[in-house]
Structures are given as C-alpha cells and as structure tokens.
Length: 476
Ligand SMILES: [Zn+2]
Image (tube, rainbow, N blue to C red):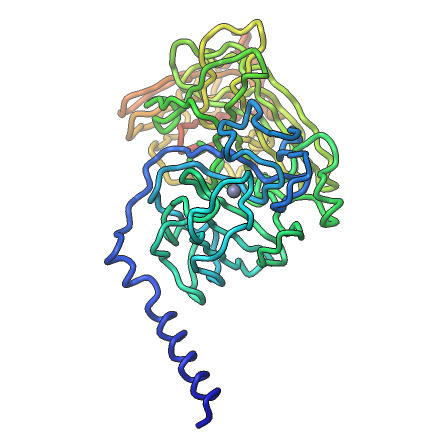
C-alpha cells in the first residue's frame, strides 16, 4: 500500500464516522431547549443594491427604502451592525437561542470558518465564525453565521425544517450575539465579489429591484404562509423594531403593541404578513384587533400585490383599531390576479388625525369573496371543529328561521347572511360566547332592518378555527 492510498482509506473512515455520529453526542453536551415565544428583531437587512460584503455607499432594503453612507438610519437600531453591502438579515437575539433549519435539506458545511477579512464596519473578529450551510435541493442554500460551539449537525446529514442545527452566538465578525441568516441561489461559496445572496423577503419596492442588474432576475418572496389566518408567529421572523409589548389578548390570546408615531423619521417598528393566495379572485382583507384601550384610530395597513409580471401595486388603508374588537374586520376588498404575491405591512406610523397611543399587531386573513357563492355540495362540507351546527329550522321559512349550534369552547362566534350573489346582507351575531347550546333567530331582514325578498340565502358561522356555510330559503 502506498502512502496516498493509505490516506484515502483513512479519510473515508473518518468521514463515515462523522456522518454516523451526527446529532447524538451533541445532545449530551447541550440539551435541546424549546425557543421562547418572542420575536427577534432584524437589525440589518440584505442590501438590494449590492448584496455582498463590499460597501458601495448605498443600502437598499426590501421595501425600496434606501440609506446612504454612515448608515445609522432611523430604522437601523444599532449603528454598529447596520452597514452597507450586507448579504443577509441579522436577527438579534440572546446567546444560545436554538437555531432551526429553515427548510428541508442536507448539510454541506458545518465548521468554524474564517469570516470576512477585514470584518465589515472595522470591528475586530471574535475568532472563527460558527457557520452552517444547508442545501435545499432547489438551487437554494441557507447559511447561518456566528453560531456558538458546538455545532449540532455534520456535513452530509439530512435535516428537516425546524431541526435544531446550532445555537446563537457572536463568533467571527460580530460585536453582539446575532444570527446572520443568508439565502444564496446557485452558489454557496463565500466569494466576496459575487452577489449570490437573495433576499427572503423578496422585493416590494415601487421601482425595479436593483438586484436585477447583478443577477438578471428580481428577488422572489421565498416564504409565505399557507394558513388561512396568519397570526404572525409561525414561519420566519416578520417583526422588526426594539419596543414591542406583548398583550395576552386577541387572536389566540397573543398580540403585540408598539408606541404610535406620526413622524416617519422616528419610525422603528413594522410587521409583515405574507400569505399564500392559491386562487385568483376578489379577496376581503380582514384584520383582527384585541379589545385594548388606547389602540390607534388611524393605523395604516400597506397592502402590496405583485403580479406574475413583477408589477407591484401598493394600497394603503387607514383602519380604526378600536372598531369591532376581538373579531375580524374587513378593511378592504381587492382583486388578486393569478400568480400574484401579496403582503401586508403595518408600521408604528399613524396619520395626524389618529387618537390612541398604540398600534396593535394581531392576526390577518385573506378571504376569497367567492366563498359566499357556494354550491350545494360544498355547503355539506364540515371541517374539524369546536362547534357543531344543526340545520336551520324552519327551512324554507316565511318570517324567521332559527340557526342553532353547540359551542364546545369559549370563542367569538360570528354569523353573517349573504345573498345568492355573495353580497353581505346582515351580521346577525358577533360576540364572545361560553360553551353551550345556542339559538340565533334571523328574521329575514337586512342590516337596515328591511325585509329581504324571496330567494336563496347563505349564512356563514365562523369562529377563530372554524367556518361553515349553509343555505336557507326564504319564501314569502
Ligand atoms: Zn450579518
């Protein structure tokens, strides 16, 4: 056996051992800890103008806001970490918070590795950086930097979304503990000159994404929520800013507030909802606000729709957050074409007419208005439930009909009547109820208490987790 062959065998055994040993020994060193429910702020976003570690004097954020040199701007809370030429998003969080895999894939890098040289912003490197890179089978890579030792995964290991791959730290080019989270397309090498990074938030600015000049394509919105109701605490980080207050109230008993501002120069907070819209059509955009005092009366919801050709439209809706507490309220109805992406941004900004000290952040949902125009077969569909509906009685009816159901848990229950065209006729119930058997009478009138004409009507019964549509027939 010659010397080089000997080394080959030795290396093969070494790697095989590494792959097999994977996660097990690690857990004896640092047991898995469930992350606390809290939202970690992004202090520095990917720079659309030039997403590498080379500063070029301009930092352009996902929403088109741009900052010039010496970037210690109003929405950049830490001057030290807010710099130009940044390729990822920095999530500031305490040391040793578990870092989870963003999506299924396999590990192609897991090692303490040299960081940028010199470090951005002139800071001193804090040793080698704990770096993990996962390949996601589709040309995309996610990179996790500044992790503390030991790293939880080995090269070659398969991971599922949500697996703990390591723990937050400040190794490498970092002056405070934070996760530098970077998405790369086509190439995982940390070549400082080529802008392989893409922005998971995509591009929502009103003008062309500057990245197109470097890559030939615009940034895609990589993460969307497929939940009908998006409460903001699943999926990737959507909140930004330092002064959040948690409120044990609202949808799923959790909501957040921030101080309301009128001067945009002081604005420091926002949240983003990015729902998945499967079908093109007309959608109600519903927002949920808890019953708290001092909510803003003119909160501004920015609704972005980006069509299949990449054209953005932005609609701003002012909404009174004290209105209709503890339930969903439709703030606008918009047509969403097939292949579109949608997002809603709510900031700490209110207009000058607004009363109330806080902007409140809670659940959002997009409801296809065609759901009110439902066929007979679909109306038979029953979803898993915290409520059991009984048939309306009498049906057909002449003067009034009784809608009855059994509620199994405390819940806000809403009953709406629609006509056959899907137009809203009346809300007959919208209140928080205790469990039990309930009967609600609809007397065949609309929301102006006028009797409606003979015909087919639909009624929706909804709670936080349930919605069903049934038919009644009014015969005069
Ligand atoms: Zn970073």
